[in-house]
Length: 59
Image 1 (cartoon, rainbow, N blue to C red):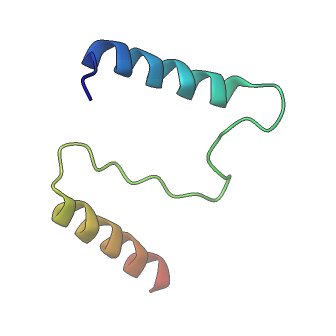
Image 2: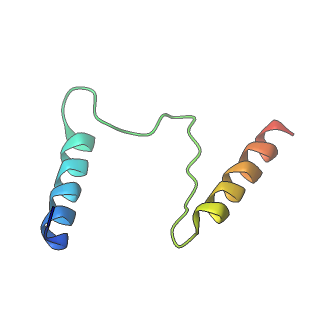
Image 3: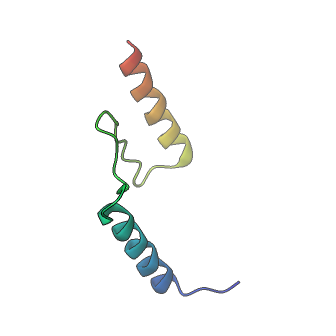
């Protein structure tokens, strides 16, 4: 299946905006959530960062 990257990206951004700004049950992180930025990390690096975060919270 072929798709236009820019169009798909624009649609995803619009969906995310719509989901986080709707009047009923907006999609937002829980108050006690922990955000882990995995931008630029490989899957293994992201996993290691997540495991480290969990270990720190459990200590």
